[in-house]
Every structure is written in C-alpha cells, then in structure tokens.
Image (tube, rainbow, N blue to C red; front, side):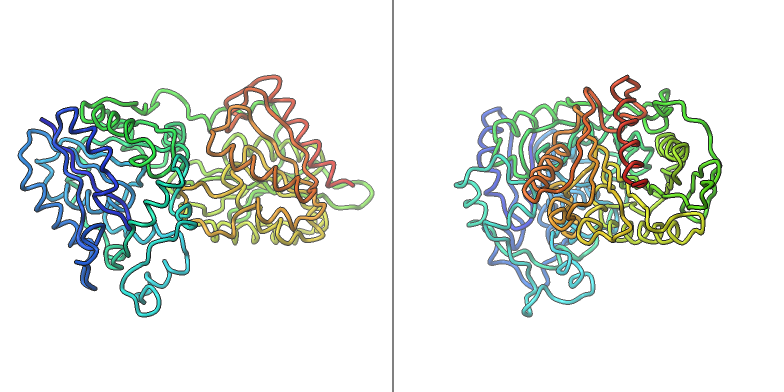
Length: 506
C-alpha cells in the first residue's frame, strides 16, 4: 500500500488537500495531509522560534508513524523545503518525492525567495522583522493572492476560501537555510507543472537543452513530469486530476526528459541564413560586428544592440554572444551598414534582472562612446526573457533610441517568477513609450504561458496607440532562427532586420 504525505505551501495547511485526500483514499491509498506548526489549523502554535527545522521535525514524527510499504512525499511551493529536509534524513522510507508546482531548493537555500515583495525579502535577508515588530509574514488579501502564483482555475468561492483560511507565516521558516546532505538527491522524483503558472515540460526541456548544469539531474530516468492546465493551486482547482497524477507518479509514470547527448542543442544549430562573415571586435562582455567601411560621406555607423534571454547559468558554454543566432543577426545588420552588437549580460537567475539591466545600460554606453558609432542612432533588439529588459527603455525612451525590437519575447514576468521586480513589466511601461517604433516578431507555436504576456502587451500598446509593427512567423517556434529553416522564417528575419535598420537610417 502507498501512503501519501501532502505538505502545503505558505500560509496554508492540511485543509487545502481535502478533496485530493478524499479521492486518494477512494483509490485505496493512505493519505496524511500535514499541518505544520504555526500553519493552518495549528496557527495558534506559532512562536518567534518556529523555523524550518520545526517543520522538518513535524514531518519526521509523522513519517515515523506511517506504516506503509511505500511513502510518497508531496510538497507544494514552500512545502518543498520541509519535504526535502525530511526526506534527506529518512531517505530509506521514501519511494518518491513529488514537486507540486514547486521549485528545486538546494542546500543552503532560503524560502524567502518565494516572497513576491522585494522590499520584504530584503528586510528579512538583512535580519530585520517583517514590519511593525512582527515575527510573522501576514498572508495576502484576496486581491493579492495572484502575486504568489496564478489563480487561474479558482472560482471566486475557492479564492475566498484560500484567503479566509490563510494564516501568518513564521518568519524563521522562510529565513532559515535548508540543510541537505545530498541523500535526497538519490530518490526518484516527479515534477507536476502547472502551465497557467508559467511552467511546462517544454520549458524544462529548453533549460536542459541550454546545458545548464543545475538541470541535468532532470534527465535521470527516475525523474518524471506531468502537466496540469491550471494555476498554482491545483489541489483546489483540479482535485480529481491531482489525485490521478499522484497515483500515476507513485507508479513511476510520467514524461521523461531526454538528455539529447547525440543531438546538437537547438540554440547551437546553424542560423537559418548563410550570412557572410564580418570583422568582429571583442571588448569585455561586448562584441561589435562591423560593416566593411565607414560611409564615404564621413558619417558614422548606427548600431543595433541584441539582448539575449535567460536565465543562462554562468557555466554554460559557449555564452550567448557566441550562439549562431546572435552571430548571424550581428553579421546581417553589419552587412546592411549598422554595427551589430552582441553581449553577455549576467542574467544567471530570476533574481538577476536588475543586474542584467545594468549590464545592458553599460553596453549601450560603450557602443555610443565608440567614435565609429553615431551616438544618436541606436536600436535595441530583445529576445525571449530579454524582453523584460525593454521595460526601462519604454518607460523613458532617450531621443537617440530609434527603435526597440522584440523577437519571441517574454513581456511580463511569468506567474511563478516571484523574484522578478515589478519594474520589469513592458506591458505597463509601453504607455510611456510615445511614438517610439516597436518591432514585434511573434511565433505561431509559442508556449502558451509566454504568448499570454505578448497578448497583454499588444492590448496595452493598442490602448495607448503605441507604434507597433507585428511580424508573425507561421508555424514558428521559440528560437525559430536555428530550429525552423523555413521560407516563412527567413522572410520574417529579413523583414524584421530591414525594418529595424530602416528606422536607424531615417
């Protein structure tokens, strides 16, 4: 017989699993919805000393009482921290760990990274209280729950239930680092990804394909995945499906992510066009792809700065400026008389957008200071998650910025990107862009969670009458320049480049 230990996320308790637990018991399983000290129905038991270790001890006591041949531990959001801490101490008792729309905490990580409010994260990180002398973090209001994750699929009644049953979270459960010996990493695992919250199997496979060493463990054959088409609280919005997925996960079922060792990663495949080589100069993190010669009239070259997405782990090689797509774009615009600028900004983690924005600003300053470049004719071209970096430039476009382009961009933080500052929301700042030309390239087969951010951006742009030209790529995919060598894809790149360079030469 299988026993499921269900551990809820921040501000909630065992009550949130009620419907899921009932369906699992109907299947013949033992089910233990855990309510941790100071959480849910045990909110009154919280003290200033309640910490992550307290919750680990809660689960150790529970697991030591369970009499079952197989124990599957399920963690949702914050619940993954005590689940992993417990499984690391009792690995011989655990048949599988299930990550229910949760991240992959590692040794030394703190759960405070889950908090959506940056100012509060910084206060807690600096050792101060949660505000007003509190040693607890108050739960969000009904209107604020969406900041903790997508509420897609929740009815107004279910959302009110979530808010009404929420309790304050003891601060030390968020600030005490998770301690792992590594034993838990040897256990079979299943990830349940909620697509409306910004996670998907396609996104996992993309991260693995980038060569990020943090995600290579996901190619282990003991690791499986399921998708649920709902938001961050599937136990409320899709209880039947959650129960079914947990039963299948316990049986070792689910999608496996291939290591793809014999196939070249998509981002390292050839550019869709054969572009002649151009002189290339490297200055720090910036590369300049140069035209053949300065104009005969004595004028200087305009420049296009290409901004890659991410996050890209610092150990990934080659780095983005050496990826075929960016080299191809850089050479292409150089052949049309503009400097193609590629750079490696330091978006290594979701918390790094501010640092990446600083790197981008420094690169732009470097390019504009080059005596061969016309400082009054510069364009920015953002790709994928680099699209969030366009927000600053829409908010206050300088007169020398002639155009902003975005190709298969992410134009708002995805619902589960809680650590991304609200400053990086192009759909909000486009209202300040005035008549700055915007060239947007969309792909038909975009991931749904990303396409939704583009739709919102286009709607906001229409409301403020922004100058947006949209180029669609039929049957194109995210990263189409190296995966979809079709006539339509070539035409889309040609049109986009002509349009951007055209704005520079006006």
